[in-house]
Length: 452
Image (cartoon, rainbow, N blue to C red; front, top):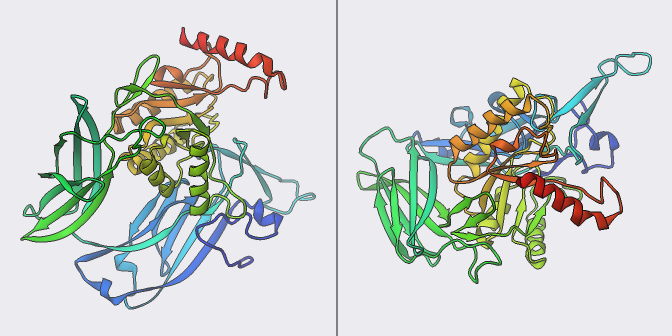
């Protein structure tokens, strides 16, 4: 038992009170809420899904006292079918146990130090530290949703795009579903920005060609950046529509060479930032006002891109990037990894799987970043990142793989597995502090060494 505090969701819990203990707390916390479920959802042809946008870090979710899902890792969504656990036409209770302790086996990593001197510390006292230099905000950070699906429904849509003859757009799609009867037909329609249907196909996988397609261009490269089509995917059985899903699509290509990254066949210059989702009071909790402000600041400064340092950002922000043509390097939370164990690697692989599953259809995402500044000079880092990079490519062959490197060209073991290198250097800042005149020379020298 402990103090009971009214807690907003979405939000981090750290800065909601004036308590330093709560701000710096590491361990289990419990969320509880009652909610009403309409009796209309008791239909046997419906499945009721409980969805979390993200919760940091380890979550155990109960509905009416019954465990329905566990999830390890922050920043990414998870869900459970809770149909059989609900009381329809009545109140229900959701309970979430949340643990923000990071260990050498979590992504990102941290350490726990137990203070065993009982003359100085109470029994069980421990301190936690992290491998990174930003706040380990914790809480239910994004929306929690309850929604009903038809039992026969669309599970997932995977889309890739191509361009032929510089003007013809190609949308390749693959749709997975829960339909148990072969009689159900899949109809895929493509609508332009005005809602006009411009193409149609049938089947659970295939390609759709769009003559004179409007391409998805980054901001600053075209007068009409971020153009999106919409796929209307329908499951039709016996003349009736069983399920419909709308998937936005931007037609564009990405390619990396030894010297450049190309978007739609043209060299793209990344002008932007590494940023964070933090803000006062709400921590890493979703805040649409701050998202809108950030997007306006990015464009006001003439930027066209950012890296999601050092974790996947909210879907609401990613939506705005798709719409406004802001290019994203999507990064998993593997920041400053050091002890490269099999247990850590398993969690790292799972995190990459979840990140790519969530963002694979986004035209704004042009590269996957598999790590930020790991201790890639260690011998064991070579095999570790061989496995990580191979896994990422197996999930998506349409985008380059990258990572941020802070080791030198002659001792790094990770760069050989990357398509694009992101080199983090702090000349005049962490080294030769204050001597800005050395930056150009030192950076140029280092980049030339890497290029060789």
